[in-house]
Image 1: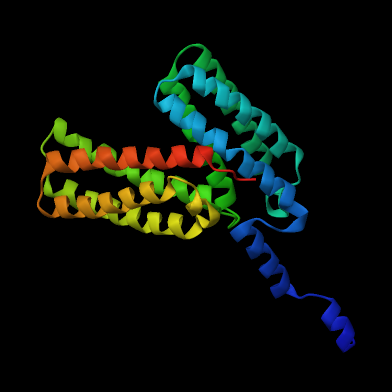
Image 2: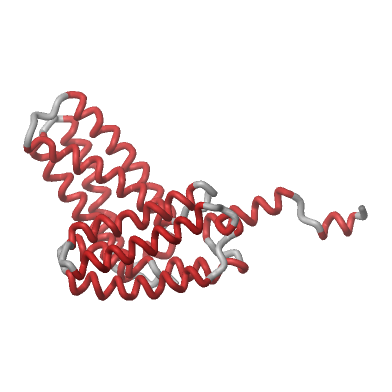
Length: 249
């Protein structure tokens, strides 16, 4: 093989770099339309998530209609090879179609809390299948943060029924550490989204509540911890409202 031939044929390391570029910023030309379609679906997704959480059936249905149309576009585009060759990918697509159909039926039946839970499952499906191939994107990191946040909120609310023990505080401290680490990743991966109006205010509030929760856990104030956990969840919801309005295409 000549020197010219060696230059013309990329090695394994070059292909690895290409894969990493797609995983990090989803800009590989072959899959750009897929990346664009899937990010376009996220704004109505977050909008439907928040509307269902607030019990607003009309708004939920409106955003679901947009989400379903945009998700149909996702299915028409070519995914990265790692996904297209994964037997779990068609199953993930089928699961998402089922989630969307069930959510729409639940909204029509005015079961908004159940519809919200169905929608929460959608991003977990995406996070699972992308995570297996190191194709995580911003929305997956946000999902990880959400999971840590929910653990804090659920455990903190226990003070209404039982007295928090030392082990509960220890678990809360671990959950908070996970949440703060996850939040650092969310901020690092946000990119241009961080310039969206409202992002900075919500982000500052979230970071401030992390610090406040740390202080309250150290002094073992269960009622204050519970209140701060509720405020943190509300701040996170404010961030989702911001994302529901952010242009992503």
